[in-house]
Image (cartoon, rainbow, N blue to C red; front, side, top):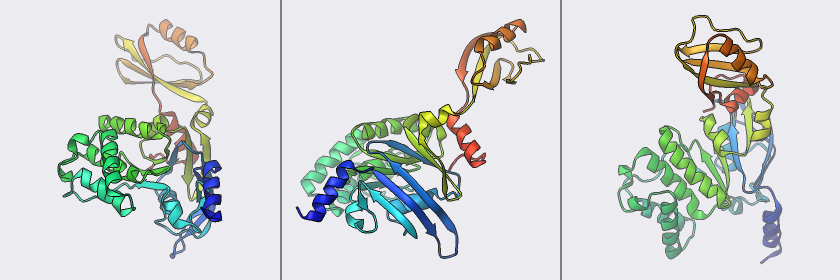
Length: 322
């Protein structure tokens, strides 16, 4: 092994999975898509990158995956510089784009084997990997059917399986569950959690904020080309001082709801009470007031998506990221 290769291998063992430093991108028309973005993703992390439309999220993902040229700054993947060592860096990355972009008239098994062969994986090893990835994606029984016959969720899982054929250390997922129903999304979540648990670092963009909150341990929110917040998911969500609940009520709610100072009560229907309250407020006080008003609570569940609340506060955008 040469000195350069040895040095790179040493860096790979100690460096962050992704390090972005003062990244800037100005397009030919003068649009500043990125204005000094810096962030780090630790090895083995499941990281959410969120932002409203036009925030710079797609440009950032495009630069990291070498689809867009940067204007200034630095991108390193496990210590490998994207500009100086593009080929070596790209071998560390797997990308699952938002659009379905495989041949619909090809079989899933062949799609995976041919993809691996394009990256120099020997045929026998590629076939073994294809079986492993199709089984992990719960697609092995569909290995020899035409891909055009797969459901939307199956096609999404096939995209993930294909990206994993090169054994990337960093997997980038751009809206991987867009347009599929909640049950299919949950199936995909199980696949992604298994991939992450096996050691692959994952960066996820999604407009389903509950998805990011469920899957990811760290996040960054980008707005107007700048990172407006980043850190551990739990730490950032703990900063929120309001929580919401939905209370299922025995019987009908009264026409006039009680007043609880500091809390907001609404009735989405005659048997449900929607309450927003300061996190420090004593729930016993709330229930006592409700009992005094003749309101009997049958059950209670958390209402709000806290990540959505954080997103709106930081971006001022009522639209979910897309």
